[in-house]
Length: 120
View 1 (cartoon, rainbow, N blue to C red):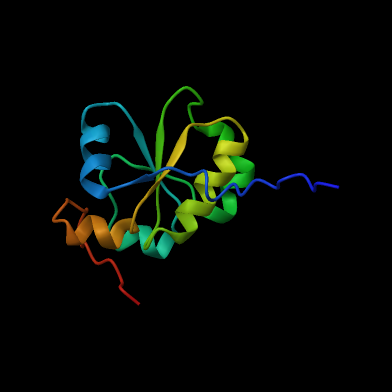
View 2: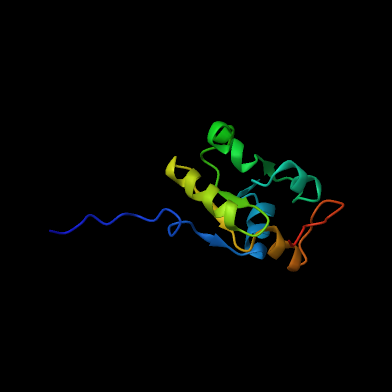
């Protein structure tokens, strides 16, 4: 007997490169959602990004505009991939910022002062 295929919600999350994410954000085609913790946010974030720490997302996801495309951001792309998978399950078109804020900064894209993105 064939076992039903279990879907991997993480495999279905689109990965967006930092440059593409910035272009979509600046053109108004996508919103950015940072899911890092408060201490990380204060070290520097993308100006104009929404901020809901990952631990609060299950209670606060309804604050997001469901008709808007979202690119989810964390430090390295791991937590944001998880958050994007979760948001996709409730019908929000969410993608993951590939490589996270570390890749964003390496790409020379702007981060608010002090602009410290801890690489540890």
